[in-house]
Length: 256
Image (cartoon, rainbow, N blue to C red; front, side):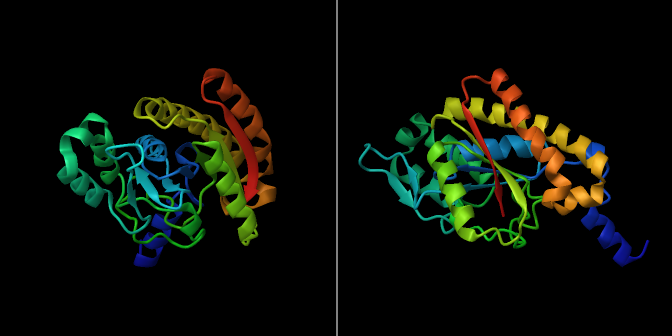
């Protein structure tokens, strides 16, 4: 096999044409307010389940608990690494931030990716070439996903509003699902398990519909080739909701 054929084969293996249906994986994005707790728990668990995944926050700034409720620690998206946050808070008051779980959370995050990213700054469809070391990066290099999972209604609203403002330049369908997860470490862990369970159910349906319409057509991501899968999502979500009644969910089909 020559170099060109090898490169083509490798590219096709990235969740694209030529990938065996049994190996096919939908691409996911998890979203919360600050890209710290709920979205990062979902990001980590999806990556551990071998799903391509990216994550974002929708807030104007990254906010973490401080010494009092009126003194949060505030950082900028896309500019401050999790490692920097960890070292800064450890230096400020290691005992406090270990006791409230913040250092443990950020320690997990810095093993997942470099730092928090803001949804509104995401250039959809632009290659993410500087994220190769992120967990779950393999398969989302092209900057596209099939399913966006938000963890709070206001984040769902922000994502939908942003997509509408962008005007659907790619004309590509994307499922946006909100799963209400309380913003604490315990509920985030439960939510992460629920997210993976939903991902598994959605992916099984995608594998079946991909086999029916053909891999090349399905992987192109167009509305016509994805229609049979799209129609199954509400039913899949309803069945999932019966298994996870304490995680209220909302769904819509939106467009990139």
